[in-house]
Length: 322
Length: 287
Ligand code: SF4
Ligand code: SF4
Ligand code: FES
Image (cartoon, each protein chain N blue to C red):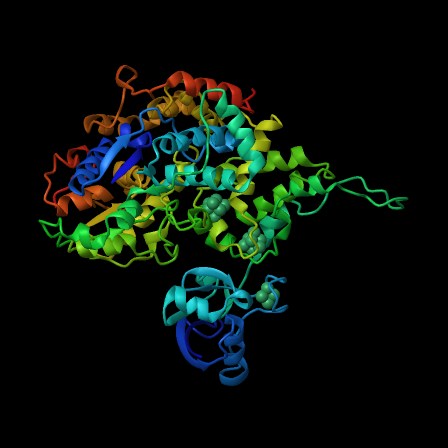
């Protein structure tokens, strides 16, 4: 199979800016992207740098960007890649920010590891050093972790996260999924401490922009976004949630649905913000002028509102405590 | 052809032009619309953060409204689409959960069966009407450079959309480009096409939302777009209503009209500004 790769090359030690090098390769039909990189390194240009180790989707080191999608090189069949992206395959590092490049496809993942470290990615428990029996956990208790335990710390999600693009403080999908890995573990003793950390505005769950990129890229099916949803729920369940604009916004939907069936957009902002609502006034005026605001007297309601109210009443499971 | 239309809250409140232009275009294409006035809010991507189970029950009810009528459920908002599909995938793949939800629904006389397909208007017309037929309605070729902006929830996660978005490649979508082409416009290529507008953190982290929105606007502008088009009213709110504040946050001068997808079709079909609700936009549309 003939494959043409355009590969990002950059050596910050003696080059000013990156360039793309084109390689024409002849590979087996079942070749994966890592085979192509190896072919280049071993037969064409030994100076090409990239990370790899296990070749089995386990070590998480071979993650790169292929035509905009973060992938594990060892788990990406080239045939499928050509189907998805056409003949021109472009390989880049997970992040092409100049300051992050160590060389070619190898980046400095320090920010990623710092955040992983920050959430204490290990079991916090009193453990008997000389146990008489095994420390067992029931199958249904393991099920609660869902796929959160499959993470191989490849960074595919982290470097695709839309929130992180403009909010460097955000813990990001991997560290949050990792938090859930332990907050959902019956044996862990630090649930509240973990939840308080991720409840903090600016770094935690409330700063996820819900872009779904982490679900899309994760090669291990960890589904970090859904774990973030579970964390939100745990935060309310455990009474960790403080009343603030974010928690009141999430809970405000129930209020609005109970009252109108549909969302009262204006009231939701007012309810979430309290006196801070003032900051939205300029926008509100321009929206009003263009017929984009509904007032209490012309706010539409769902037909059969009583049904909706009853359904909320019988199926609501959480409430926002003080 | 008949659709059960789940308007979503935004199309009934802050983007009335979306509902108006959708009804106009649907009529032109010979699609009968039954608006689901008994529907509730889908939770807009936030309700499930507070209460996952509640979000499932109310959306199962929303879906069953279309099931009862034996119709396809058609949405106008990316986030509504994803919330409803999320519910459908969860219930269709988990009998226990479906039973628990149906237990609640039975108390108000409803039942979720999973029989209705859920599709965004964009993909519904592509599937049911088709490009060729749509192109026959063009009376006023667009002749414009347009930046297609997809928004997140219509393309990701692809496993949830499971074909309902005609297997769009989330890294290289082409539905909107194909439409622009038959409407005789030119779509521009730019990196931000599949990025996030930040709408869902508008309240709790306004600067973040504004920066993400500004990135898109600047990118579209730099690539020569005369207008942006989006299938999502929430993206529209950020790109249009918040355009000024986003530009300010980025210290840039930006003035670029943003169209809802049906408005773009309507323009090419020869409808007037009023018929498409263009008078409701914050950034003036003079195309
Ligand atoms: S869904 Fe949230 S955590 Fe996942 S990539 Fe998007 S912003 Fe990041
Ligand atoms: S959650 Fe998935 S994508 Fe993210 S680091 Fe772990 S394995 Fe990689
Ligand atoms: S080489 Fe280990 S995951 Fe690819």
